[in-house]
Image 1 (cartoon, rainbow, N blue to C red):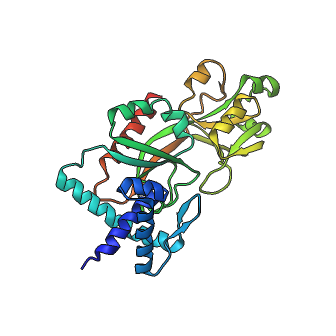
Image 2 (cartoon, rainbow, N blue to C red):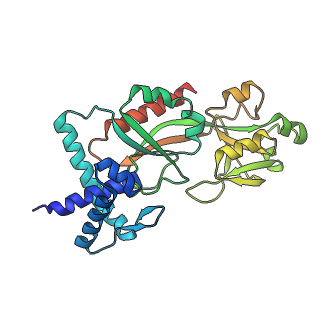
Image 3 (spheres, helix red, strand yellow):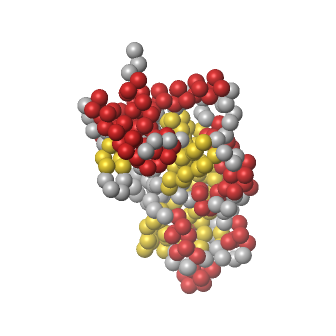
Length: 300
């Protein structure tokens, strides 16, 4: 028989994880902060393990809590799916959506367009989390991840949304000072701005494709980044040459702020994926946001 006290405690734990604090969990559940705290303590006592590390500023799952939550989250999702099906609400886009999103895709593709999505779905609130890696979506309370490249996590459902071209760009200031390379192989002798691949912890390799021809070029430079916005600012300032996802740069190229160094070598493509925890029926809010991401990228 289902222990109602454990089920009640798990529901409170889920609210704490999703809300990120006892205060937010209390608001989601209509309880007091102390009521949430007591429910968590009762659950911990019942299980005989400490589930949360609490400080004055934050709440985080312990290792035991992460394992426990990872096990029960799928069951909570299944109950939510069953309730949605029973109520006929599988097409309702509402509630709260937590998205782990690529630090390039958000500012370069979605920023400035999100108001349209909010107007379409006024009952939905979105929280964006930007990080280098996908992480553990379940324990972090993430509904969806939008990232370039595969995640390597077999427990996630992945869907390739589309592919973006790779551009090699520099500012006119850089070209005036260091010259413009005429062929990709000449990049070896130039100052390049490197970007860390979150899956390997090393800078991305640079490759150039034209038809069936592919050239891999060793590059080096003074700066290495994990933040695409900072890399772009340094590229605009003339510090070095950068390889970037070819979305969101149309105006900078048209206004002459950036120069596309090799317009005939756009063959390399970088895939954009959507990841979400395995569920029989992905929520309508997840499906709606994925569709919007595809729409926004196509409009760039």
